[in-house]
Length: 509
Image (cartoon, rainbow, N blue to C red; front, side, top):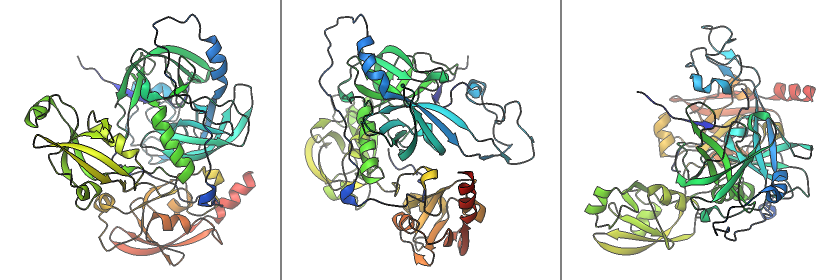
């Protein structure tokens, strides 16, 4: 009998190493000096949870403090074009979408080519983590949003700005202009154990704020195919609309951000996943401080150690990360790591497997030194690695489109690296910023800009990398942009005219 499993991001109610990440150009009009970078005033409580085995009669006192910190996130997205040739949506997904989606009743113009889909609306949840308005949620809740609003339990509603997105972990950070908000204390998810009681809080199906209880079923799960995964698994009921909501411990401290379920029916079946707050916090702090996520990089290809490999490499048990290849002139190569080394510890902490090493290295700030112990030929060696920065990371975080005051809005840019050159057949002599994404209803798309094009010049000024492209679109003198691009084997010029879209926006407001 055939079976299937589906991992479902919980967005619509009722109805790490090197994956390319799209980022939106056309950033905010003003850019604060580095010395005035925003600070996160988190309330951190990492004291151990009680594990005396006694059952608690009620969690009401805890929830009275926690519930006001969880908000409803309402999202409106721009209309998009969809092809009538798109594959039919599987039945188990259909209740997440409304009429007009491919494979659903009401799909206009079957066989007529691309169709303009109606403006989409979605519902998710978020968690207030600072009194001055920083909110954690999921990337998939607000990605591509034209408008984001958050509603508090006391009835207040605020327009929210998307501070930044990180698709590689499915984390997003929002900011509302308010003070003295009910911020949720942040716990230490590293100390969670299987069997610990947890409470999931969110807005499932849009029926209103809901609390469910369960236990930690497992930790360190990798289930969704993201670049960086370390999910907490729980049997606390999580349903569509809960995405971005809080997973708290029995003391009422935030330990995770509810993200997805594994389901054969589309509803909760007792297997839910939350991003550990330790991982979400690292991403949030980087987005707020730097406007992007900066990750450490060793430059190694690694794999898990199975029992057969453990025996061959002289290990007592199948633990650690086996180095298959080392990038020439990379940080690991400079430190002396070799193919066949088994990394057993990093900065004094044992490495369980290749995914654990990848996560641990990503958390180290580029430029810092890391101490690595490896098993080589039956002997333990200690090496010092000067950690580099992961190539291909976005130049800036995506800003809320409504906030953009620059040009090339809806265009994602990245630095050219070996992977993107190979993917788009870009010659070694071409230098610039490669386009990773173009919003289908943007002026750039209308002008003919496509993913894989390389921006060589902006308004006759040379572009060396994504940072140049971002800088040159920050404070434009006019809303028309002359681009020189390399595209599909040749160089050409084109003009992106956003003056019309700007006028339309002004008229609507």
